[in-house]
Length: 393
Image 1: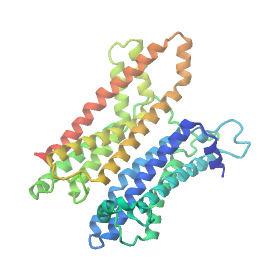
Image 2: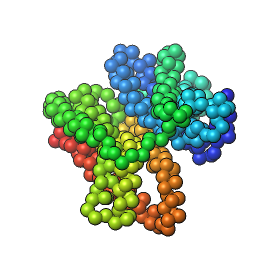
Image 3: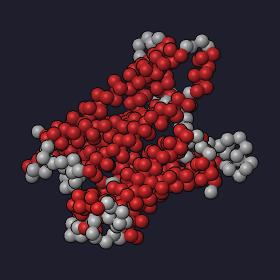
Image 4: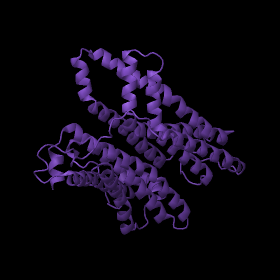
């Protein structure tokens, strides 16, 4: 009840962030229900249905990441003065944030269930003029005309709010002994330790993909990213997964490296300020930017492979899943940037009092963004090119 009251009294921008989580959960829930509908309509092809369900883990992970990012920037999840006296300590605030995340995700999956049933025609609300055209599509994709296992459907869609709530509770768990909820990663100038491991994993993933791709090419099984997203060689998928995890692990180290490059040589005040900020914020910005780079490399690789096999049309579920993942990782990266800006508010106010103009601060921001693009952009393109090179040649 308290979570619902806080949701009613929140700022419109905060409510918009929560609605984005709801939309992401709705898209993921629709994909899960579509996989279940395919399994109900094609009981003889259990392997294909399982593959469709496993492909839903990507939008599920992206939805959980978005939920955590939104919860970290939610003012209701921060311990304010007087909350402890009212009985809202750090553990209860964490529980409140997890409950709010679960409620908004549950709203999203319920909306997806309603849309899914309406498209199948189970609600009897389809218009007569569009029922025939949609039935031809839904019978193959959503399993229209076949009974839906309700218990299985409810259990599958309940995984989405449960996963998001657990991820939020784990991210916002109390970490200090003073009774405060530490929702921001502490700023530090120490170099992250994940860069070597990330590079090693990315190299191992590309090596595995290059080793397993000749057999797939000989069999004529080009990675079918367009359309059904099934039948992919396991070695290639494992290589892609390792390369993506490597980019995520290397993200903080790459952001820190960008700051070091700005501070190299004899930097002026602007370069020194920009580089130090990137070094301090590398732990906060690195992981979301690493995930964004991994997804960007996957999208680029998918585009190259689709051009290599243009006869395979882009399926609607592929488009929905890609849209959910891209939207989630982009919004998560922007949310981390806003969180970093809020964490530097006191330092920014001090610089303004010392005489720094707003134009200088904007130039520092543009310089940081340019450094990140120059470091992360070529690396992302290189990983995507090396991942697709064994598959199209």
